[in-house]
Image (cartoon, rainbow, N blue to C red; front, top):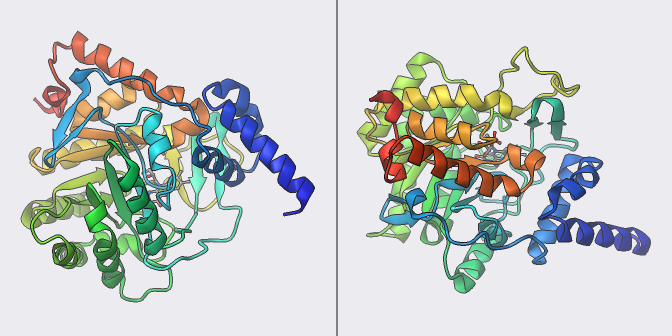
Length: 373
Ligand SMILES: Cc1cc2nc3c(=O)[nH]c(=O)nc-3n(C[C@H](O)[C@H](O)[C@H](O)COP(=O)(O)O)c2cc1C
């Protein structure tokens, strides 16, 4: 980058950073940029401490106890935003109850050619075909341990992926677990991104069983007694038989949680954005009902015995609460933040407190799966 370009980039990034908490002012600027450039700029500003900070302590009604840990609130940052674990602290400072980093692949890789992220603003949606670009497990481990050394608080999940060229997928997930288990509050086997050829096939019954057994063994090598819980992240496009297979595997293998869901390959006829024909996974508003329906199904199929993280199209308290009542113990979001800005986090938390109280719940756990009662 030339000197002039560097200076204007810096000026832009600084103004964006300073205005992150006045999102309405920076939004037009960010939207004028290609989505990935806007994202890189946001990460740059966050790494320099230019993000907003401190929304105060969370209302205790929102606290969730799970896997021997206490989440101060149930709203987490979904995977894909912080692929290299470089902005954990700033994202927790925005008010998230936890952050999931990744997907992390064993080796660094460039991902698919750009452009590979597309905004569908009128649909409050995004289509992405990133293909797991990232700096690899060694960099993620270094960033995560540097953060752990400084951090006073905060829970971090680590989402594992595989390199595009790897033939032995299981070995890649096992390598990720070996490198990162000791640093994670939970580990995710991501077998549901649509942009790595063959990945979703790992959701099949015998493939998944084998994967879980081997990743768990890798985790136990490095953390023999107190390893982090192992979760599986699934796709919203699964058929009826695949859903019940996964539920049986989850129960049979004692999987500690499911994340429901990743992006969809479906293209609802309601989509209006000019990029709706792009290849990749669709996230945001149009995914909301689809992913909540799958969440509800998985809660039913597992008899509520497997903790669920609900993700997909959470853009306000109503969708967040719907996921909790459908069976989610925790929730996550990504796409809505692109359109609503970080103020969305406080709005969702305040809205959840209101709804829990209105329905007579003394704590969030009481509302989990309430729609199944
Ligand atoms: C640009 C982008 C990149 C993503 N990358 C990943 C990823 O690396 N691993 C993963 O498990 N999910 C990834 N996701 C999926 C999100 O974690 C989430 O499951 C999905 O976007 C639905 O949530 P949302 O509607 O709140 O965005 C990505 C999503 C987006 C928009």
